[in-house]
Length: 138
Image 1 (spheres, one colour):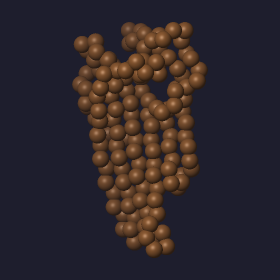
Image 2 (cartoon, one colour; image 1 turned 120 degrees about the horizontal axis):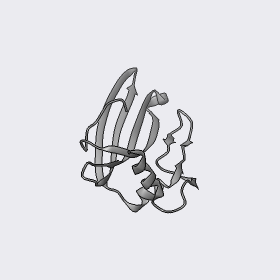
Image 3 (tube, rainbow, N blue to C red; image 1 turned 135 degrees about the vertical axis):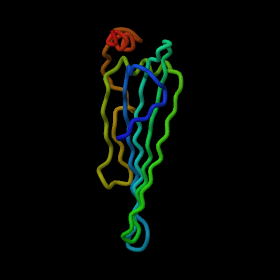
Image 4 (cartoon, helix red, strand yellow; image 1 turned 45 degrees about the vertical axis):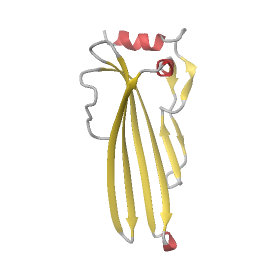
C-alpha cells in the first residue's frame, strides 16, 4: 500500500500490524488465462486527541487478470474504524510474530504479523503493553 489514507484525523499510532493474502488461479484452454487477487491489510491501534482508542483497518484489494495476452488491473481501497477490543490490547502484550504460508504462484499465499499472536509474553501483566506504548508518546 503506497498511498496515504486519512480516516481518523489527528492521532498517535500505538500499534501497527499487517497481513496480506494472494489468491492465484488459472483458467481457460491450456491455462492461458490467469487471475491474481491480492489483499493488503494494515491494522492500527490509535489514540485520538480526545483520549479514545480506536482500531483502524485500511486495506487494498488488487485484481490482475491476464487473458490472451491482455492485462486488466483494478484496485479497491477501503477502511474500517471500531472501538478497541480487549483482544487488541492483549495482542500488544505479546511479541509480534511474522508468518508466511505458501510460495509465490501457489493458489493461496499469506504473509504478515496480524493473524498470529506471538508466543512470547513481553510484559508481566495484562495491559502493560498498551501502557508502555502510551508512555513512549511522552
